[in-house]
Image 1: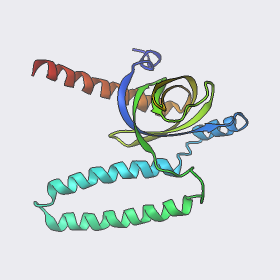
Image 2: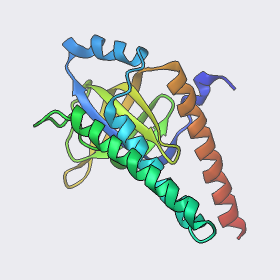
Image 3: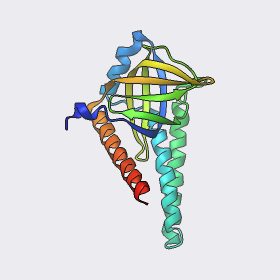
Length: 196
């Protein structure tokens, strides 16, 4: 099956998402940064958070079987967390929302775009820089997209449909692999629920 066809498989998923509108005069410079593999500090922080959560789960599983090793690993982990906080503080820009944490969102995802629910409406045609962290692998990527439609659903909630216009080929491959893996998991769970 071609990569082009796989781009359009859609799944309901949960991911860490952060996006911002890019003015048209800065769009080319922003797009070039994708090809230069400039993953921003917030992607790293989001990935570290997910790894930390998983690490704590593992610690809980082995805590009683080998206490001294778990204590040593927790000390090393605390040192790494401290270094991460120092790096985060050094990269933060006072008064800027550039370094806000990713927000976990339920999304409708494909290799060619996504739909998200948000409180603020975005103009159709708006260019976006999207930081996307796939879960549970905590796989960060920067994608550029364009708003193709918006519709109001409840109160001040809007569904925003975005087409991906610029994504590194490696990121697109990882995204499609993620979608196929999640789709397979969802189908397996649905079959189990139907038979069980």
